[in-house]
Length: 242
Image 1 (cartoon, rainbow, N blue to C red):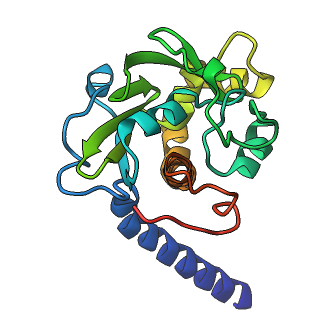
Image 2 (spheres, helix red, strand yellow):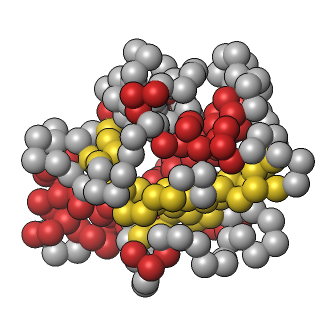
Image 3 (cartoon, helix red, strand yellow):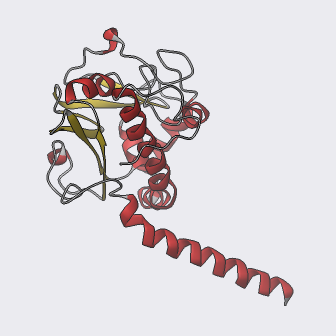
């Protein structure tokens, strides 16, 4: 009887958490957006005409697009990093960056030459192909990074992720020399019945909130660097607003 009561209590607590997540999820997927930014057409949308999910997040940066763009174009594991939670990236992918164990704190000229067809490393042997690039305006490589000039030498940075899921995207972008785990996941998704559905379920409850955590960190990290106010404060707990 006691065990059954405990199970009922645990089940009720879990149900409450799931319900809270489902209520919060729509706001999570459009963090920082204003007006119609979350639903309006953006560069890169046409590459996935019928996505299983879409997230759009945005932030206002007190710097013109010309100062924001160099930080974006040099991103990637083994490149400048993603300016987010480096400890998480290192734990998940053994990530390393051009400046060692942390994302870049300055512009690296040698990382500024990016063109359509180039591969951007996302970690774990997974790469995103540059599908579109227009300097100071937008970059589409796995995700779409859109820069819009605002009055007062400011920039609106909008980032959209659109596809069938993070796990399936990682499987599609796996390189020939990817780690065994990445290859095993890619194999399962293509050969095991029901694996794609299971992957989307994992994305829904684990991948989506994890991506939100990392992407919000990235937006804030770009903002601080482009504004010239990054001094390690973000890692110490400073949280710029959207």
